[in-house]
Length: 274
Image (spheres, rainbow, N blue to C red):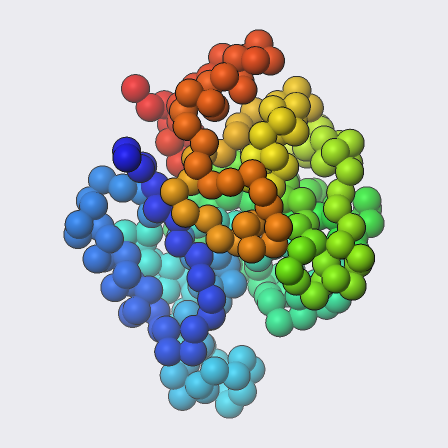
C-alpha cells in the first residue's frame, strides 16, 4: 500500500529489555530496509534502561541503570531507529503529572531522554495532551519548555497538540466524560503557532482526534500539517475517537484544496516526496 513509516509504541512489558527492542528494529529493517522506523516514546526508552537484577520495580535495589541512556539510544539507532515519538509528555508540569500519570516519567526525566536523543542525532516529535485537569498557564508552560529545548537542540520535527479523549479511561470518567470545545482546540493550535514561531515550523492537527472537519479548520488556525493516513491505530480509537484510521490521499487533497491551500506530500522528517 506504499507505507513509508512504521510507528511502534507499546506497553512496558516486564520481559522486554534493550536487546529485545533492538532485535525488533533489526528484523523490520532486514525485511523492509527502506522504511522509516519511528518508534519508542521516552517512557519506553527509560523502561529499557532498567537492570535485570532489579526486575520490574522501578527504583528498587541500587537504582543504577544497567546501561547509560546515550549508549542505549546509540544501540537503538544502530539497530535501525530513525526517529522517536515525543509522546508520554502529557503536560510537562509535575503537579499535573502527579495527578494524571503518577507512574510515568517526571518532567525532568522526559526532557533528559529527549535531549539525549537529539544530542546523538535522533529527531523526535513533541506532543501535548491537553483538556483534562491542567490550566491555561500549564499549557503555556509546556509549550515554552518545548521551545526552550528546541532552542538548544533543534531536534523537534513538529509539535502535535492532542486533545484528551475522555472515554474508556478512569480520568475521563472522573471528569464526567467532558470533551474540549472546538474553539478551545483551535485556540491551542493557534497559540502553539505563535509561541513556537521561528523555532518549530510544523504544527500538526491530529485528524484522528479532532475529526476531519475540525482538523481542516485548524489549518486556518496555525496548523500546517494533517499527519498521515494510518493502517492500524488503537490508542485514540479505544478512547472514543470516531474519525477512523484510513483516509485516502485523494481525501487529504480535497480537504486541503477545500480551504484554498496547496497539498504537499512529505516524509517523516518533513523532506519532500517526489
